[in-house]
Every structure is written in C-alpha cells, then in structure tokens.
Length: 510
Figure 1 (cartoon, rainbow, N blue to C red):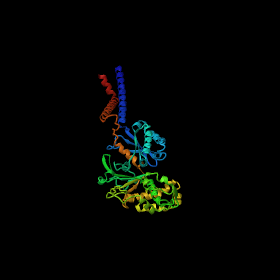
Figure 2: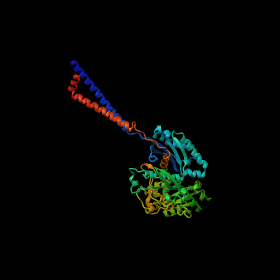
Figure 3: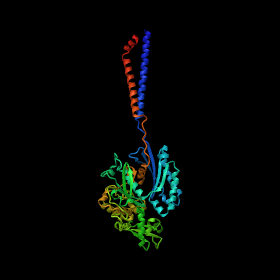
Figure 4: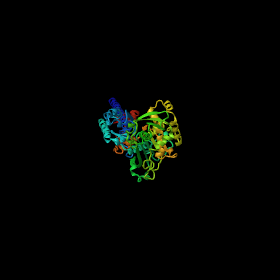
C-alpha cells in the first residue's frame, strides 16, 4: 500500500511538472507568435537624387518614398538638401575638370544619407536650367563639353545614374507646378497642412505656379478650355490617378538678371559720354560696367551697337515710375496673333485660380517685406517706390549684412516683378490677392526638382509592401492552438492540486 501511495505521489508530481512546462511553452509560443506577427513592418523605402544645376549655383536634393505608391505615384518627401560650392555649372565651360571637384562634397553626403544597400537602385538625375540653355544658344559645343563633364563625374558614384540633360523651360515650369500643388495637398488628401500657407485657400483646385530665376521666368496653370488655341504651350501629366493638362510657358532672357542686362543694353544706346542715369538704382549709387560684359550674353544681342566707349558708368537716380517705364519697353505688346497675349506675341489664356510665386519672386519680395502678410497691389507699389527713393547711403546703412551687389539690385528686381506680374501676365488689383509668395512648404523647397521626382515615380514600377511572416489564417490557428493548450494545462493542474485525495483514491481503486 505504501509503495502504491509513493508511486501515485511520484506520478502526480511529474504530471504537474509536465503541465507546468506545457504552460510555459504555451505562454512563450503565444508571445512569440503575437510579437512576430504584430511588430511594425519596415517600409520598402525608395530613394532618389535630383541635382538642380541653376544659374547661380547647383543644389542636390535627396527624396524618399514608399515603393508601394499611391495611385501609381510615389508619396515623395525631401529628406536632404546640399548646396554645391561655387557658381552654376555653365561658368565652368573653360575648366570643366572643376565640376567633378565641386560635386564631391554633396555626392559624398548622399552616400552617407542613403543606406548602402539602396545605393545601386537609387536613381540620380541632373537637370541643367536656364543658364545652360543660354550657353547652348551661344555655343552648342561648349554646352556639350560641360554636360559631358557632368556625366563623367556622376557616373563614377555607386548610384543608378539616369542621365544629365538641359531641361526645357516648359519642363521647368511644369515640374514647379507639380511641386507646389503636391506640397499644398492638392493631388492627395493630407491630414495636416501648414496653417500659414493653407488658411483661407481653396484646395479643391490646383494652384498656378510663377517661377523667376536669373535667366528665365515661367508661368504655369490649368486652363483646359484653351488647349487647342496654342497646343505647343500645354503639357499633359498623370498624377495620383488623375490627368492634368497645364498651360506653361518659359520666357528665356526674362529672368531678373538677364532682364537687367537687357535694360542696360537698351538704355546705354542713347548715351554719348558713357554716363547712364538709371532710375532703377538708388541715388548716390555708381558702378562701372564693361561693354564687353554687357554684350556677352545672347539676351542682349538685339541691342548690340558699336559704342564710342569700352566702359560706362551707372549713376542711380532712384525713381520707381521711371524705372518701370524703362522696364516695360522690353515687353513687346504691339503684336499678338491670338485674342490675348502675355508679351512678345506669346499666347496667355485668362488667369485662373490662385498662384504660388517662388524662387526669386519670393526672395526679392521677402527682402522687401511683402510676404509676411497679405499686401494689396497698391501697398506693394507704395513700398517698393519708397524703397527705391532712398539714397544708397541710407540703404547700405540699413542693411549692412546684405551683399552689396544684391542690395543694389533690389529696387530694380522689385520693380521688375511688379511690371512682369501686372503688365506682362496681366494680374489686376483683384487677382493680385490670389498670389501667394512661397519659400518652403512643409520643410521642402519649392521649385522643379521635387516635381520632377514625383513625375519620375510614375515610371518606376510599384512594389508590394513587406508582408508579415505569417498569413492571417496561420496566425489565428497558432494563437488558438497554444491558447487551448495553455487552458487545458492550467485546468488540469488546478484540478489535481485541489483534489489530490480523489485522484489518489482513483489510482488505488485501479
């Protein structure tokens, strides 16, 4: 009898140990299955690099987006910006080997920001803008030499180099239009927008885009009623499952820098003593200009004359009205083969909706304190007129930290922007209220590179997101099985511990 009792006790203890081990195994299994199935999945992130080779400098932008996309277009965000030291690439046509040296720092930065495992699949694109378009007008051979040096340099990096091209003015305008509408949430619904940008704005329609560089200016907006009037000025896009047909035109030589050269070349023709009294510069301002520099750009060729001097002196007189009159002489409004034109015989459909003005539009107007609040057209004219009327001595004292060359040209640039918008693009006192001067939106730069990257994602095949390690049915089965196992083990152990005598009697009877 004693032996049987000891045997039963031994068996009971072993059963409880086995049940305990089963409980532990079941708990561990439940935790492991739950964690592995429900842990946050790593998104299949793609990267892209766009280099914007502009007129004054080159900027590198790094973008990322999830490979699974949204209606065939990537949800792209800017994650890095790097400014390449030195001027724009067009300035290196005599010393093209410097291009590779200048690009090194920013390309090495891209190596560090983008995971090494993604290097080979990351596309790299360089787009050269207005200054390279001018260089190509002057000499295709020189432009080809510069672009060849760029291609050699970028091909040496471990990325997927897609090419370097001189983008057209239309592309520059259209991609800028894509950028600001994407950042404002006009293509896809976003949960939050910047209050200072979005407040009071109707997002049901797209914004128009106004871009101003050193050599060209672009206007782009949707107005599909007039696509047949001048089809060469319209470009089609498909973004986030919707088709767009946008009007866009680029006015080469009408960027703020080249327009100034044009104005000087026009005005100096009437001077016989090499003195140019210029109302677009502050009174007391003086500058010597080489005639050879004046005629170096293709934009001034139409004004080229044999002058009786090699240099001339600019003497500022600081008068807004006279400055504007001189600028307007550069706009040919006497000829229009359509029922409505901007200037120089270029078709411009009726303006529609709100407009985002960026690049030099923003930088100049921001300096003149015309972007922090909604300023009427009349007030903008008054403020710029007041600024132009100040003496050069007062202006230098008021802005000691600003580069003197840039500071001296703000009167001209502000007057030119108003002239372009009001007389070139025909904004009225009412439609002026629909212009929003924009620098960055949600931390991303306005301009064509982001728009280009968004459009490019349409051509990159979408990929499936990373899947959980277990299918839903397998996950549910394992969770049920181990839960049942745990429940049976706990109930059995509880029963044995609470009824030891009954179990013992049953064992004895047997």
